Length: 295
Image 1 (cartoon, helix red, strand yellow):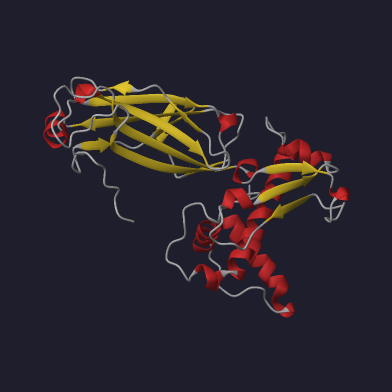
Image 2: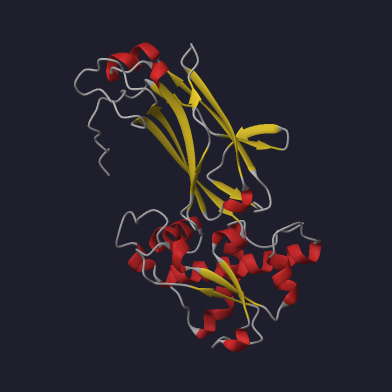
């Protein structure tokens, strides 16, 4: 995808250095991973990061003094499409800026997109042609996506009475799916929990889990992951028709699911091979880190 061309001067590569995002894990800062496994919506995320700018080069390349810009950080949740932001941070005399902010867990789900920008705060006096002049103009940006791995955050979850639907009233859950590969994954895939299964309903609810509730969640997670893998195997040829699918689309998620799996054979198998195929699916799901792990 070609880079966006802005109607004003922007810094060259290397002038703005984005250091890796950090996540506070207990009392220790560690690199923010691309996937946050086991995340609980009841837990807030505290993230931090540092940006270093060569002030001299920045002015030469953009015509803007570093004192006239600020570091801004915003985040968007894929399932809600809501965006929040932390207060702007000004750069110090050495050209550095540090952000340390808290993301409220109950407002996050799905894929979290973090966007850091160096944006104009005060327009320069007597600016030259081609120099950014509108407050809020983005001169540099850095984007990172984080998958929040949680059954209730991977998909929207709804609790209904299956007896009032076409679904079996004795089933515990159902995953609504789509084979439209360009459709937004988090807008078309949804987990339905049967209200009649009170234990599972309580386990899916936010908050601390006892061992039995965690076991129920592990079973649910494994079942969903297995279903996604089977769906990806069914659509394997269609998924390979394109080298790259739109981010967070059905094709994108299923392609990544297939790529991470050790399975590559066709699906479904013949009746003779069905039992072995199910065992392979179960093993592949566990290798992906889903469901109950061996102790």
